[in-house]
Image (cartoon, rainbow, N blue to C red; front, side):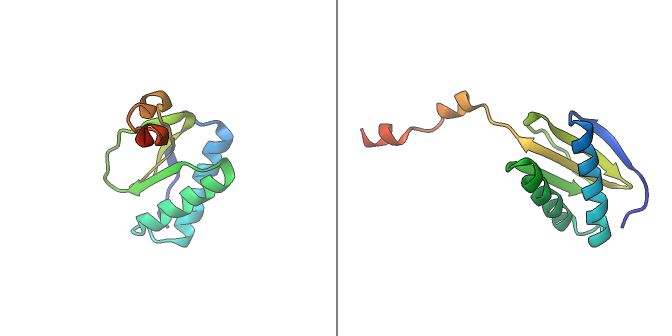
Length: 109
């Protein structure tokens, strides 16, 4: 486990969701080594999917960049020691995406 207090960088989550994210990260770090980033990310993601519905994404590591689209109220980036955790629920512009792929009916016409 990494020692130290979590430092929240950016978030638009409600306080209760933030507390859940920080608690899960601490729990994951009690179970896994800090070098097991994929296991930590999977642990946090699966619990958020269960608690708040599907579509959550989690990135864990010591050096990464990101540029993501997320649902409002569903984003947090925080650090515990040198380990950074990004947790968000992905968002899609449905009207734009609808025009990218032909419908089943259009394919069969």
